[in-house]
Amino acid sequence: MLSVTAHGPAADLPLVLLHAFPLDSAMWAGVLEAMPEVGVLTVDAPGFGGSAPVEGGLEAYADAIAETLANQGIHRAVVAGLSMGGYTALALAERHPRLLAGLGLLDTKATADPDPARRKRLEMAEAALVDGATVVAPMIDVLLAPGAPEATRARVQDWLAQAPPSGIAWAQRAMAERPDRLAVLDGLEVPALVLRGSEDGVATGDDHEQMARTLGATVVELPAAGHLSAVEAPAPVARALADLAGRATAPR
Ligand code: MLT
Image 1 (spheres, protein in one colour):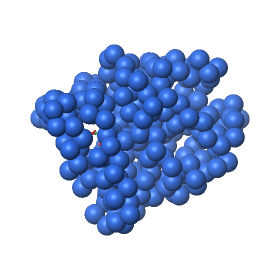
Image 2 (cartoon, rainbow, N blue to C red):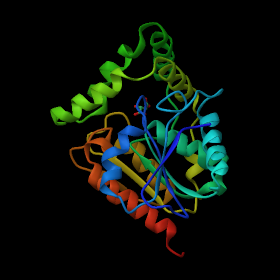
Image 3 (tube, rainbow, N blue to C red):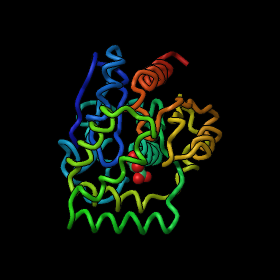
Image 4 (spheres, protein in one colour):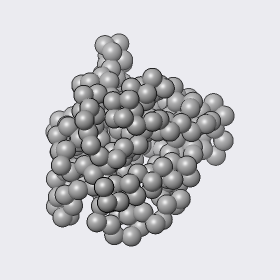
């Protein structure tokens, strides 16, 4: 069972937020503060925050989300994920399409990793089990825009230092195994959001254009924000997510 936390008013169609690697639901704090009117459920990935590990990769994580929500009587939701959260939202869209009332893909991509990137992930998974969270410390420079304020850097550095080694290992192996899921977006008939920080160096503009084109959507690009757009620019991200939730709720 995964750790799920409710925020804001109870909603018939909650907005489920899936966090990035190697963080947990705490990364959504600024976004939640900026949209108190939206009923949100934040989910901790297996082995992160309050969630126990699962057997299997992102597919098992997606199945666990569907099961955890079903246990709470939730059979339809708007699902949005940032980076690893986006990879998971895509797995959820593939495996539990009827759950999906709307889809948000933030600073993420639908393609699989090339072999060298996959090998690096597996190396990091091994190293994390020996050296702990120090292996993710250098990520600070790819997660944030070069001009990110010092307070934001310090907060993210703190999160990286607290990342659980077994969670790091699980997530890197899970992300290494993920297949190309662009085809999942083809013909998906739910409201969608594709958003990126303009300075995101992990998921490129082309990655986002490709997803948006397949969905028939346009990319929302936030100037001066990096890969962790939801941390660096919480107010505009909250506006875009609230708009997605509203479109999913509106009669069609
Ligand atoms: C994340 O932010 O979740 C990671 O950067 C994803 C990745 O390593 O591909």
